[in-house]
Every structure is written in C-alpha cells, then in structure tokens.
Image (cartoon, rainbow, N blue to C red; front, side, top):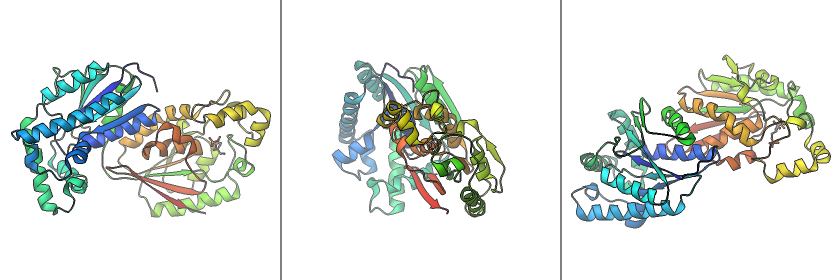
Length: 401
Ligand code: F6P
C-alpha cells in the first residue's frame, strides 16, 4: 500500500437501493486488506440509533421541514465523527444519499477544513430488476422494516426513493473529483482523479457485482516436505496427499459445475488438481510465500540457525520479509490482480494453492485487515467454500480425509 499524505474522504451519492452501502463496504474491505486504515460512516445507522428505526417515507420528504432538520442533525453527527477520525493515511467513506449539490458542498467544505480530499462516488442504477432485487435482498431485512409486512415495506421504501428522486442532482464537474458507476459497473466515468489509492479503487469498483457464486479454495494435498515439516520447495505429494487429490476429484464435481480452476506453478498444487474433470491454469502469482534463505528448513532449524530472524518473524509476521524472500505484505500485494479477477468473475472458481496465499485470499473475502491474514487457519485436506453476499461472505469448510 502506497502511503498518501492527505486523508481521503469518499462521499457516496445516489438514490436509496442503488448499492451504495455495498460499494462502501467493499471499498473499506479492499483498503483494509491492502493494509490501509479505512472506515465507513453510515448516516442511516446514525439515524436509527438517534431517532429510532422505522421512520415512514414522509420523514424523507424534502418538503417535510421537521424531517429535513432531523436528517440534517444525524448527517452532521456522522460527519463530525468522520472528521475526528480521518488523518493522513486513512480513508473514510461517508455513506449517505447526498443527492443535493448543497449537501455535497457542505461535506466538501467540512472535510477540506481538516485537510482531507473529497471524491464523490455516485451509484446510478436504472435497471428496475436490479433495484427490485436490492430492495428485496437488503432493505426488507433492514431494522427499518422489522415486523412490517413485505408489500407494505416495499411500498413505503418506494415512497422513500421517490422523495429522494425529487431532490436528486447528479454529480458533475462543479462538485469536484468523482467516480460514477452506472448499472453495476456497466459504465464507469471518472473525473479529475489522482493518486494510487483512487487508481486501485476504480479497478475495484468496476469489477464489483452481486451475482451469486462461490469461490472454492483448497491447499494442495500433503507434500513430502509437509510430512517432515520443511517449508517451501517443490516437493511431490505423499501417498496421503495423492489420496486427497483423489477424494477432491470425486467430491468437488458433485458440488460445483464448470468452474475456472487455478493452481500455482508448483508440483503439489498441479498434482492435487489433476483428478478434477476440468482444465486448470497454473499461475505464478499463486505460488507459496518465498521463504528465501529459509526455504527447505524446518521451523526448528530456522530458530536454531537464525534466532533473530525467527524472533522478528514472530514479532511481526505481516511485515517480516524472509532474507532474499517475501513477507505476507508482499504476498498480499501480488494477490491484488487475483482478487480483482475473482471479484469480476461470475462463474464459480476453484483455487488450489498454498497456506500463505490462501490466507491472503480468505482475509480479503471475509473482510479481515491485512494484519489478520498471517494467522488464519487453513488446514490441509479441507475444502473452503466462500460465498460472498450483500453483507459479507459465508465461509464453509469441508474436511475431506
Ligand atoms: O508449511 C507449509 C507452508 O506452505 C510453507 O511452505 C510456508 O512457508 C508456510 O506454510 C506458510 O505458513 P507460515 O507463514 O505460518 O509459516
């Protein structure tokens, strides 16, 4: 992650049910995974905790002075918390409709006063089916509609959208730098963006979609070096590892249809995928963390030969880089294109790789920060099914011994 000196505030813009909170959450998930400090400030949650859930559609009518005043107060209190939190190196996402230019100018003014840069992220969606699916999948589960009959909740929510639609002023150059996404990444427009973080985020948001699919992950079967505790290398599978490849080859096709299959370039992953009935691609980016001078040693040998190296790794496993090798941070950085491709794909994917590499992928999809990644549990001979959804990601494990 390239450190940027100025704090960044991404101000979401768009009518209700346009996927703003989903995009906001994905942005924070991605930046945290890259090792950056990022956080969403969701005005809807402030409204619910200050004024209570279940405000009717009329509350959102721009002509309702009391409603507008109360909404202004919660917007202010979320923004105040955001401003107290942002600092150089941090990215805050201000998640609200922000449909009016005046409101957006207010956000900009307040952020610039603390030295933060503001970029608007507008989500436009004109596809009635996508809007309908979004209302059903997310809004009906919202605390705003707890205990309300479905048809009544949908009517009320449509009323809320109509109020905002009357006040909608799309973002343009007069607002300042922006990213506009139309119809779930079908069209993307950017204006006046600069810097590393924004460049990465454009790639991320253009690949997002909410079509249901699963990502299947597994480590290779046990290798000859696993069996004796040696790290790295390019050893073949043991008979136990071969038996896992066999079990995987007969079980996985009962679970998933026509996936893309990726392995690393190392013998143990290629052999593990060999019994699957689908073609596979061997990708160098999926190779195991490079242990450099420690490659081929056991942990006990590293500790006795280079106790300082061993201790440094223990103290900061994320940043520790093996002499002439890699750190977890390096692995995460090289996995970035894999993440973007997995986000983009609509077909299921099967990834046969290694402990450190899979930790990186799981950390991203399950919304964990970079620092958690070196410590995640990824046992041998276990298939992990990740299913991203509107709120997060299901992580289901299938031991196959
Ligand atoms: O032991 C198997 C292995 O894949 C090694 O090749 C690799 O160095 C290690 O796991 C990564 O795990 P950790 O970062 O916990 O040492």
